[in-house]
Length: 220
Image (cartoon, rainbow, N blue to C red; front, side, top):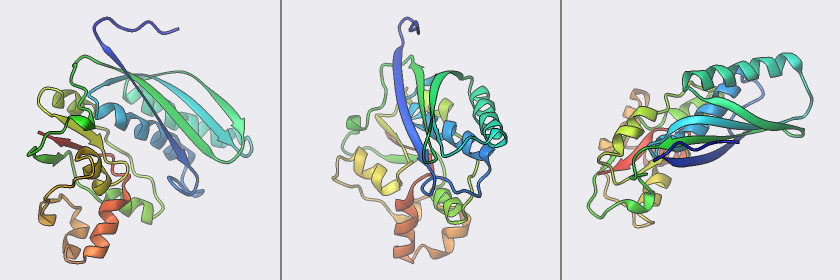
């Protein structure tokens, strides 16, 4: 039983990660557990919410006590870093698939919905775009810096906000309702390793469409 805090909106989001899409069999169970929590928190950040609770649903093909222990440590340490309490969940036997539902509170009435973007808004990102493609290409899982505090601050002046889990182009398409935006490619904050290929449009398009960057894309 949860008792909502007075004068705050409840923000709920759920996310899933699966083998072969978001992680590989060679990734450590600790990094997979950490990644599960971090990716789920991104949607709360883009609505200016403070994460409070999490619920996990986990599917394993077989129970490996050592694997599960390391996975649980990745989950609990990450949850502790973001002041979240794990309040429940479920486990089943099946293909490797993990989901996390996060619950947070938002004090601002401006939850920066993507439908709130205004014509002639400027578009900004909270960091570089393309690291998700690079780490997935190398079959690794990098630690994420989920912008919880930035999201709460953006409520004071941003019109809309979305996380870039599905790529820059998808994010722009969402906040512009499919109308698109005028963007100069040299203004996009790419990692240094991609600066030299900005004229390779097919490669850049692939990088910017890939996703899993988990930066915030917002309009003002």
